[in-house]
Length: 208
Image (cartoon, rainbow, N blue to C red; front, side):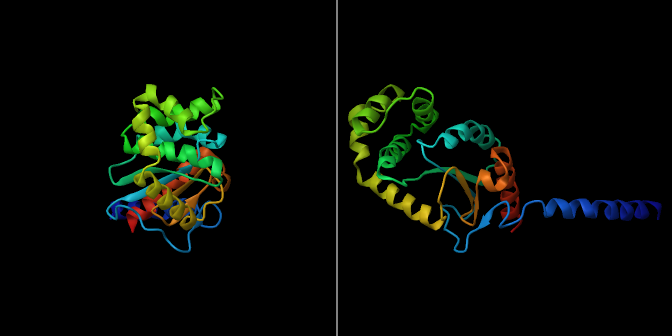
């Protein structure tokens, strides 16, 4: 009987805390619930998409934290990047991302591309610039140029543009959880807080 009373007392004391935790992040305040969810590539996993541009300094600042955070994700989370093209001069670097993805060299090129632009002020505006930059990172220049103008990269760009519209992305960096929720640092209160909101939404999707 005494044990039952202790459990009941514990539950009574914990309920306000649990309610506060559940209400900590609210749609419309800390994240946006998309009116029309976007299909994910694997229905068996919780998809998390980091939307970015290599030319965005805020994306560059966020990337090291994303890399550290993503290493701790469970196997049921499908984490991926999506380069956006808001202007024509953003397209070459988006194409370069997809070239590296198709060549299996993202681990070697992703952070290096951010660093080249934002730390070393390197101009990577043309296919020749990019091919020369990626060559020491493991992608032959001729292979790079072939992939750069390929049907496969064209399709990835079109699919990426469709997702960008579906996610209603107007600025980067942004993150999208399971095609349903869009999160920005501005809404969440900072980069660290944005990742905490993403963690919350991952758990929300798991519970469903």
